[in-house]
Image (cartoon, rainbow, N blue to C red; front, side):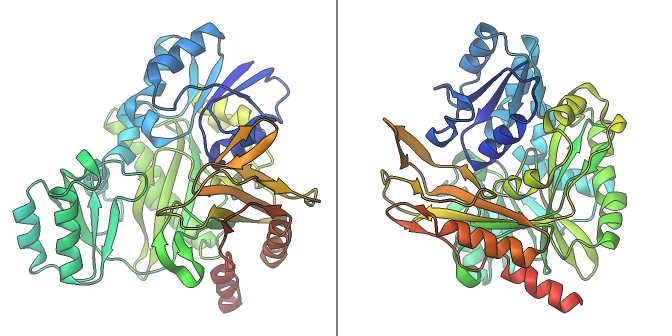
Length: 425
């Protein structure tokens, strides 16, 4: 089988490493990938949004199966384009990827089908949004409708912050066209949980839950980032919460999408908040999360490629998908100054890295035989263990063996989860 993975980050590297376990895959390509993946896949210099050239490459190489991992190509219709030329894919078509591509669509879907989420209002005119904020409860949450590299959400703690957010999105266009329509929604409180799921449009199988750490600095301080680390499973996602989510959120969502004639196949990501009134949806993503994937896939026992094929051909209900009864921790090593301004081009080295550690490279390029930093989030260091405490300790021990010039990382990944375990016991 000839397989290609669209995308270039740590998530894609984790997917590629897991796919390599399947011996029926004879050729594995990454479009465009990054230098850190060169040992695991053939790198092809075609951008993830260059759908026309992705399609041409698939035909030239007689690709049998494609994994479309990032949000942009999914929303732009990459799966549709590949299906048109006979390439099977893991990932939703554009009409289903809208569940992430438009926050207005997803909020209206939840309202229509009674799926628990924050109360909200939609605005297409700035004056009306600003007038609404004169009386709206504060804090509040302002969201750009479209994709914005995961940064189109502003939590406003004061009325002035909320108005500034509206002006910056709708007038100053800081998120481009994504901010021409906005959602203003109720501020929810409670622990956050990420749950990725496999679905073929009818059957849905949740993966191990995880906890992301978005802020750049220890103690959840600093700017929001794409994610500075993750742990799995998430202690707040108890069996009781999982059962409630399946009944009130997960199955109703895929059934709603089917009723809307937008059948969703692939990985559906649920960003949840466990409020005093029960779990509620903060957001949907139409793909694997990053860096959640880096802690979820190492715990997957069942063959990933077999699952992906079942999602595509509608036979997910025939599989017994299993995860290890273990814990995982991912510490992201980033470039000093991320997520704002940072230097690139430092050599990455790993001396005497523990055999159990996984490195998932996110932002790197090859210069001859040297691997150089080429992004804000450079790589994720992942370890698994029987207990979360041990997984965290092993991950940080492994971090000591990875070096590059301006490296920085949070020192408290998993600390909140450990505290939750202590509080629950």
